[in-house]
Image (cartoon, rainbow, N blue to C red):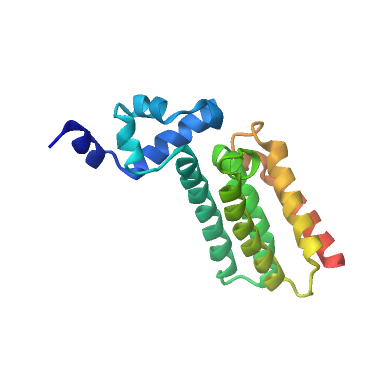
Length: 191
């Protein structure tokens, strides 16, 4: 058996994704190469290509993992036993919590624009937004305009973007997040 194949078998997809996430955050998408990543992992670049056909596919795998985690939070909140008005509040708070406790991941999911991966990333983002929008509507006692739900989403995103890099995590902005979510819900109730 050749050393390349042995290395490929030992090098898992998860190990590559974890290391690549760190490197993409540190250097930015354009500055990362598959050869450079292979050097960081002490393997051949062929070992990485065994798992991912190109850099865009690897980046998308990282982004997709983040959306899966965010979508899981949305589902858990919706399926909770609390009254709907509390679930709606928790849903928005958990979105902010996800963004501030996973700032690097959030940035890759919502804030980086790269032509090579934008269509794939936008597709994952749109599916996640649709899940968010359907959940907000399902938890609302009134029929909401789609534009109102979109504005609420943008407001949550703006909050996370504002605190991004300035707080260590959600706990540092929890009081402001609570107030912001109350403000958004109050606005939704008026529409």
